[in-house]
Image (cartoon, rainbow, N blue to C red; front, side, top):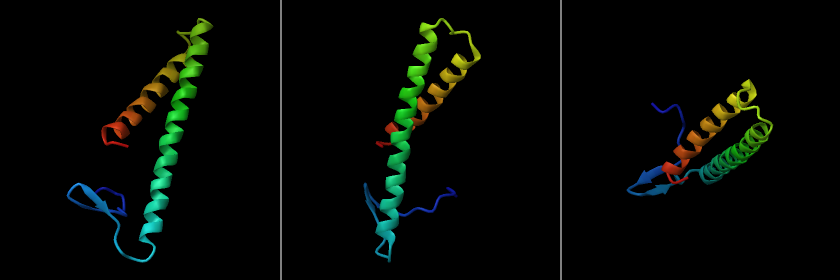
Length: 88
């Protein structure tokens, strides 16, 4: 069990939306939220990289904040890599 209610079906390599009332609107809404998440991840990764570079220029590579930001960058990068691996 995936824990997610799918709004699409799959026929071969194509995705379908059931012909039920409101299914298309729900699917488009969810797609929009996925796109919002993807966009936020990209922006957050860029922001984190900027903060890391600022601390690096200040010579604060050994600070807790620097290490936390590196971990955050890695986490964001891994999530984005999962999206990219699935063609998203």
